[in-house]
Length: 239
Image 1 (tube, rainbow, N blue to C red):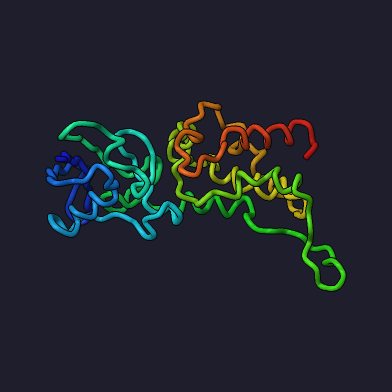
Image 2 (image 1 turned 120 degrees about the vertical axis):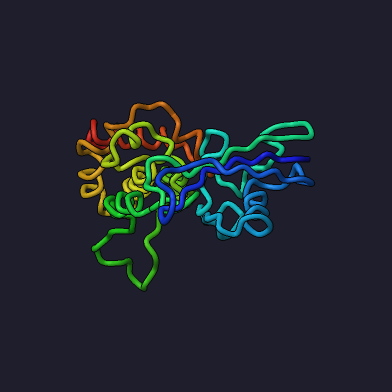
């Protein structure tokens, strides 16, 4: 299979604006991933290409990109899913809404700053159970936030959100997912502080429920549903 690969390129040291680089690759296996194709470009054709990648197994979330117009992990996107026949066209860009550092690498700090705002860690200052046992909870209580524990902080959801594109002060879907994970944990005592963050002008009410985030999530998290559940808590006062 032949792949015509268009990559959004930008080197701040010499480029005044971004441009498209085009590469034609032969003998691409249909089961190769977009990350495999990008690695071929970097290793065999142009070593100046810059991109993030690590585990290559959809766990680290570092290779989130805009592929043929939709957010996805490069390591989980097979070439055969992007076209059929002997020739496939693939267009790769950095995810939107975050500053581009170089080529396909964006500055994740604004994203991570919103993540930190929601206090994404266990808060419980009460005395632990006797005999040093862990804090237990029922399977039913665990299921309430099971889905949102799957987040790998790839930013696919947040960078696919029009509300985030419009105003980067919006905490974004990923931060709300992280808040949800702890708000609905029966062992945690920090819900009030988190609800104050996600309930302000740049919190959940900025969500316009267009489901871009849910479609973009490589972990199949029901992101829009999680946001709706947080909205309900803010409206009713009941967790």
